[in-house]
Image 1 (tube, rainbow, N blue to C red):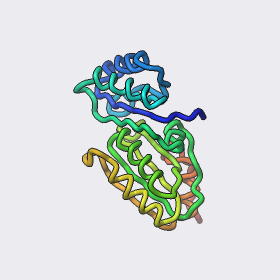
Image 2 (tube, helix red, strand yellow; image 1 turned 90 degrees about the vertical axis):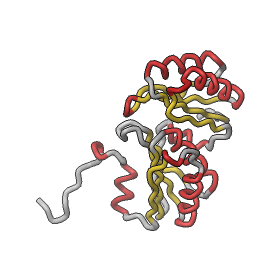
Image 3 (tube, rainbow, N blue to C red; image 1 turned 180 degrees about the vertical axis):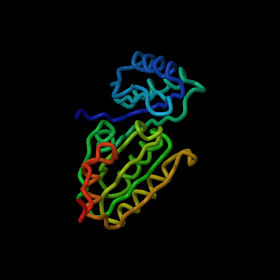
Image 4 (cartoon, one colour; image 1 turned 30 degrees about the vertical axis):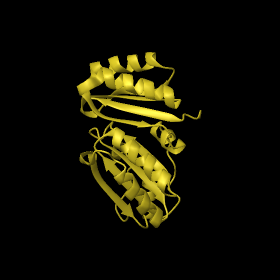
Length: 201
């Protein structure tokens, strides 16, 4: 994947304004439009990447167009590569015994928490889930040694600017093999494989 020094995301409460702002952001400077579209609770999200100067310019344009119809936003001029890879759909397997998760009410808050967590501790990101089929919420799963997971959760949670958007965090010092196997396959209940109860018919 091409290296993108900076990314920005804006969450609009209005779909029509989000589409209008997306167009303005693309036209403002030479950025890459990673994703844009509707998510749960009727929000419209725009995720862009590129050079720091270009992303900052497009980000400011999006804020200007959106004005009071912006629910949350984030601009990261030095994004960790693993964050952008998992945002765009890459999933990593659980290989270490400890497991941690941060849950937020917005996508922007999650991206900020994930980036801070992986930069501040020796962990890897298993998955980032954003908004769709989550009622607009988001979460990040970290994997590593227990002390590193604890650090990542603390650093990530503290990095969220608006604490009202934080929902919860949990740590499992030693995750059960069967749960790790399930998470390695999917965190979506509808897509999980049905497993027979031991001893059942």
